[in-house]
Image (spheres, rainbow, N blue to C red):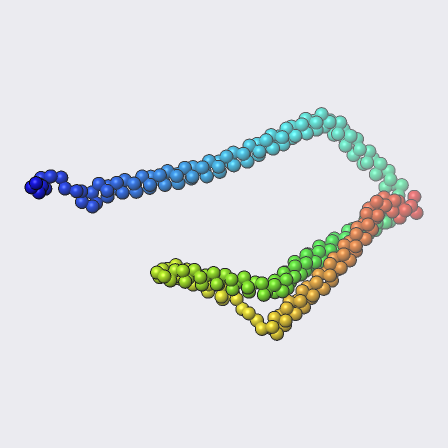
Length: 277
C-alpha cells in the first residue's frame, strides 16, 4: 500500500499560541472580571453596612431627640400653667422682704453691723471648712492615683519574676522552635530551594537572638534580683495604699464636719446674734 503523503494544502496543526493561547487569554480575562466583580460586590457590601450603621445611629438619635422635644414641650406647658402664680408669689415675697427689712433695720439701729458681722463669721467658718474639704479631696485623689500606679508596677514586677522563674521552660520552647526551623531548612536543601531556606533561616535567627542561656550562678542572681524588685514594689504599694486610706479617712472626717456646719448654719447664726435681740 503506497504511503500517504500530506498535501501542503491540508490544514496543519495550529501553532502554539493560536487557539490554546486565545483560550488562556479568555480564561485570564474571565478570572480578572470575576475578581473585579467580587471586589466590587465586597466594596458595595462594606459601603452598605456603613450606611446601615449610620442609618441606625441616626434613627436612635431621632428617637432620643423626639423624646427630648416632647419633654421640653411638656415642661414648657407645665411652667406656663404655673407662671402667673409663681410670679405673683415672688412679687409678694419681694415686697414683704423690702418692707420688713426696713423695719428690722430700724429696730436694730447701730447693732445691725454687729449682727451682720456675727453672721459673716459663721459663713466664713463654713467657707473655710469647704476649702479644707477641697484640699483633702485633692490629697485623697493624688494618693489614690499613686496607689493605682504602685499596684500596676507591682503587677508588672510580679510578671517579670514569674516569667524568669519559668526561664528553663521558655528556653526549651525556643530551642524546640529552632530545631523545627532547622528541620525545615534541611527539607528544602534537597533539592535546594534557596528562597524557602532563606525564610526559615531568618525565622531561626529571630528566635536565636532572644535565646540566652545564663549560667546557674547568673540565673540564681537574676532570679533574686527580680524577687527584690517585686518585694520593693509590694512594699511601695502597701505604703501608698495605706496613705490613700489615711487620706480618705481624713477627707471623710472633714466632710462630716462641713456637713454638720451646714446643717447647723441657721442655728449657729441665731446663737451668735441672740445677744442683740
